[in-house]
Length: 341
Ligand SMILES: *Cc1c(COP(=O)(O)O)cnc(C)c1O
Image 1 (cartoon, protein in one colour):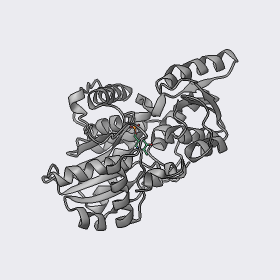
Image 2 (tube, protein in one colour):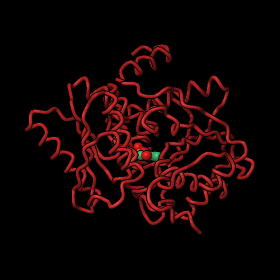
Image 3 (tube, protein in one colour):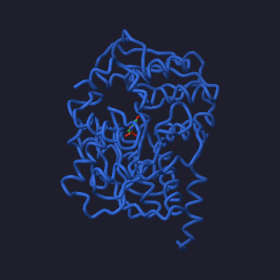
């Protein structure tokens, strides 16, 4: 194969990724001077994907832009997805469906909660039909999504099922576009990051960043902090997703779990349960920058980042971009007792 101009090559990949754009891009990339003064370590800039200007923002919008385009091309009339009632992903899916004139069915594990607040409130406001698995196992959502899609099919509708968290090869391609976007931004600002730090939940975001940085041959290290699954499990899931996403771009690449290392010490008592370190990290960033990180994802990832800085693990980095993936609606759920000392 002949070597093509790399810029043309990247344009080719951008053209291969279908996108129904919902937000305004690029999202802001801002230096966090005050935070850096307080904590030391590498210079830190924050990429504000929490400010994606659609559906209350967050990283999930990026994956959904690709899936929505795919869904519309397939003539879908309903997006079906699921998770817990405070899911950012389900809220973002409900907004995407509403915008494109599609129906949305939200599948939640467990029983209907007593209080309609946070993301659950927003999802209902956006018109999603909410169904419950009546099973407290989070994984019960996975089969329920498929059963719901089959049921809708039988009724003559055309559902587009989206896995829990939006973690699928199509969705990961939305994050490949985020890598290309940040790369452009950094070139313009003359900022050369050594590493990108962010939270890992279901792994679609990480998969896209892994593939994207490989595509662009970027020297960026990915410093990823799991907020739910144990490292071995999520690393394998990220590698599988990145491999399948590469195939969608016609690339016969294989990623292994060693390609997707994850820090696993900041999950705390479990997914969605605020940790004390996370709370302290949230308070530190809020007091330094006036920026809110959320207790489920970004707060725990920032707790991990602070620990990495403190123990000298990042001494070899000069510049880091911390990806703020959103999640602020969590502040408007529950009674906030976790914030009280
Ligand atoms: C879902 C989510 C993440 C993690 O993204 P995954 O693709 O599930 O790994 C991080 N931050 C926020 C706010 C999220 O909603």
